[in-house]
Length: 512
Image 1 (spheres, helix red, strand yellow):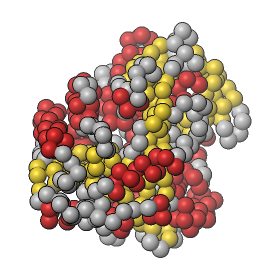
Image 2 (cartoon, one colour; image 1 turned 180 degrees about the vertical axis):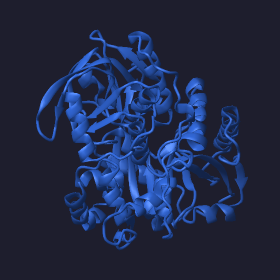
Image 3 (cartoon, one colour; image 1 turned 60 degrees about the vertical axis):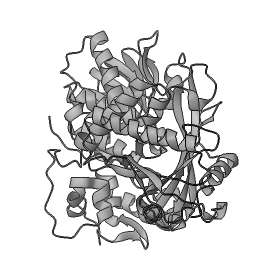
């Protein structure tokens, strides 16, 4: 089945009304993060009828607060989690070569060889990078997609990371990992591809009273509620999974990032990778990102208590990130250089171990007494595998008439192999637009009805007016925050948000 990929208010209204009119669906997915979107896509691609419901917006939670890395699993190999390491490398390769080559690119990671780095630490890093090369080969990812690691000299290191400390610099180790242009864009692409295969993607719809064969849904825009029957109900609510199934015990871990202008790091082309003092296998990364920014992260701190909708970085975490990266910089950065900050909560399974940094990133599929299937734990890179795992379980337990999983070779919207036609567009496209939309980029401009579609939404902000319109007409944005915080990442810098909030509101009023 190949249908429209456009998510918008009119489609939401029609599909919600059809669901309220009765009739059973095969699968209801609760949660619109990367895991929930992945499950909806897998189910729809197998020929199952599926509805995904999300209380807020796509990628509202943890899925927009990551490091934007599609991590090959090297860290997990070092801690003995061989299974996760191998799966991560395999899933990274699938994303980079088949599912989303337009959204995931090779990111150079540069570890500077400074006097403060001991010989033992250097040996461990080099051995780790060699092991990472082995993982890449084992996963079948070609070196043309992810280059081999190597050592470079000091001049090359400075060229890639211009603000690196030069006193005593003896070169650097250089390795490569996968980097998303944006994690929330991946969620939107997966959700729209699910819609392309017939899934109903319903945001601003909350779920309650979940049972193995039914759930009560409430339209958060109108307040209307109704019950829906399903052959399988799957809880993919991430750190909020315990609100759907109270028997679930998670141990949230907060990961914080700081946002800088790229000029503060000399407009780097590699991620400056700095060992955390006293740690064998943890680093702080200063990663070049879209919109002329660098994200510096990340922390791994216990986050007990109620789960906030939007976690906040702590002053201690901000200080830790600055202190760590400054060990490798020629000129120290201060809080005055920080343009923004964000924090996300990892939905770790509570296994009773010590630090959250040591808790396994394995996922689990569990069934509640009521019959709800929940997928908990895990990591963004493995979202496709996690979706396959829980769908295989649902098909077996509920005797669903479904085809085998197809997602290993299924190109997402925007990938060159996706069957959605790309319209011809004579206007030269901004490179940033192509980076965010891939093969779909010409459509964004060609289908725009707004004035001056290729102009930026504001001076110095590398997002076109057509992208604001497309967020509303094709990507399901219903509010200003949807546009600024998830369809684009302008909102990460408060000053930029203030400059374009009114523009976003105008697009909502005209095109919703």
